[in-house]
Length: 447
Image 1 (cartoon, rainbow, N blue to C red):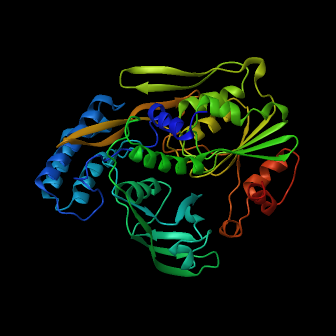
Image 2: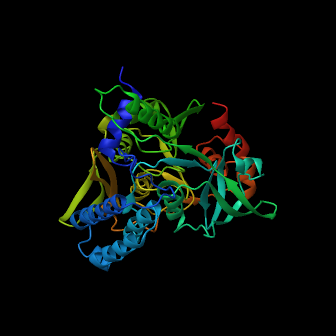
Image 3: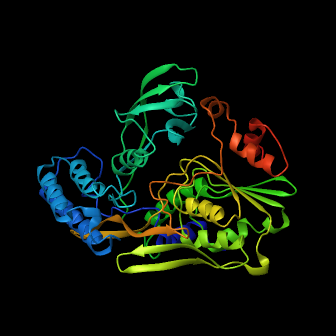
């Protein structure tokens, strides 16, 4: 039997979506207030040069959306020259890429020496930001933070639908912090300003991921991936004999994963697919799942790259295709493959989309490693580069637009706080099984 961790390492390779880059040398401990040595500064310059080279060679728009890439790199070089800490140098490289204002072109720093678990998560509902998940053992929970609290600001930033991805990138990937200063408003309009401590975990530098080593580093790396898999694996709920409910937090799956997860689908009259919070994943999984729902092949979109365009065709399942009703749930955190899936169903009249406007983040990107020699070791960082613009079969683009549901059903702050799920309740109503929003939410907890 193959191990799940092995399959996930393979999944990182072909999907390129997890952005897990390894710091083999302990010389650079990213996000730490350590003084910048001459060696560190030289490495930062090399990282910047590698990121620039990857963008110049692969970015889908040869004009870089009208930006002068050389000038932007020159500004970043100046910032690295003035940087006093490792964190400041890495921030200069990150800002170089952020100047393109492209959700998919970002700098992935070396394997961080620390990680911060804030214990809570924020998300967008319509035009407001709320606490949508909470660890009961976190400092946030101990200070009275609750799901359904509106997030007015985080460290002075006002979270919006357009900038939430930047805040997530800043606080989680680029510069994990020991805590966050937040302004919250409860569902009862109580305003609070809090300093919420994070659980900071130290990471040992990874030295060897080879299968022929003693296995310590690879084993520890796989444990972290295994933890990620537990958070993103699909969940099937057999709520009624004729309806299959699947919550799919990610498309980081293989085609085989999809076939196994949906093998009972053809025995049902309806499929409810919950893609809320699904940030996308592998094209292989998207093609497989879409193909299961169509008898014939169909054109999903056109990829427009620097060297030309190509047609994205989904292969149908023929007589084995599922012919029942399809309902899809989406929200402001549904992105990439989940948006393409939902829009495909709308354009072909194959299904009904319920929930909130999606994230509008669908362009195709590739993670490209940047390897820097560092004594006897190497430093591995990388950059995610947008390599294709995606144009749907109707000529429309979803980037920075998103998918508008057929039926907009939004949870209120009170719904979030009480754990009610009006969107899921609406989906069951459409397939002939009416239930209230509280009962719908319990379908996941009572499995």
